[in-house]
Amino acid sequence: MLAVNQVIRQQLHSDVALVNQIAEYIINAGGKRIRPVLVLLVANAYAYQGQRHHELAAIVEFIHTATLLHDDVVDESSLRRGRQTANALFGNAASVLVGDFLYSRAFQMMVSIDNMRVMQILADATNVIAEGEVLQLLNMHDPEVSEERYLQVIRSKTAKLFEAAAEIGALIAGVDATQIAAAAEYGRCLGTAFQLIDDVLDYSGNADEIGKNVGDDLREGKPTLPLIYLMSNGNAAEKELVRLCIEQGDESQFDAILAAITQSGALAYTTAKAETAAASASAAIANLPATPYKDALLALSHFAVHRNH
Image (cartoon, rainbow, N blue to C red):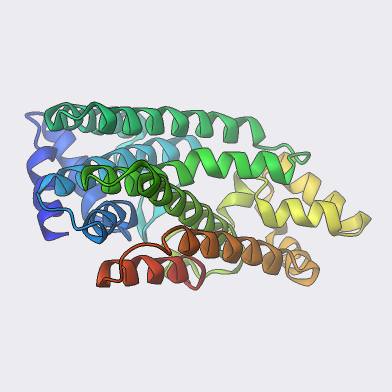
């Protein structure tokens, strides 16, 4: 990761001062860096010998950071990773444009790697993520969103980049198609588990620990799985409360919603779904050789579910 951070520093440079300023602000905010870590762990788990995984990990982090910059503008978020969002600090226009810079820089780096299959995986992932963002936009303030529609958003918006990160890690290691597919499956399932627990934490987490405002999803009118479960399983009064809150983005009713969600078992249901996805991730890499890298990947599956941030 030190090598990846060095690549990030080198590639962030721009002759435009504001680009450097915002990019530095976002990268320095930290975060878990799980997507670039996935590239490294999978490549090393398959005994990759070389340095390209550092560049690929940086590319994945740039794509992810660009999506965060754009997400925070769309969601009108003010807090991420425990700090002000870039849009809150620098304005929406600057955040969107620097997000564009990071996307285009990621593609410049892809070209320099000169591997058409890597470019295809990452280009397809970037396109699917954009589709996922639009799908989520269509779901906003819609209390009729089904669990399947919601899971489709997760697979596109979040799990796809996890999948791509693991897939390219295996690809550059030169393993066969079955092993590459197994790595992709691991990433996809891990990403699904991760997002589901994020949805749980939005109703049960601590703002200081999760690094964003608790209740943001409700404020934004996002029908995440805990709310969808309550809409299907709550009583008439609870269903009406959820409907109004989703339609109006009414966070003033957060305490009432939280009480209903907790009592209904919605958080336990969502957590169980995440546990199933994490177990599928671990199963996908069962045939990996026994190494510290495999151990770390299995530990990541566990962390995805058993975390408070």
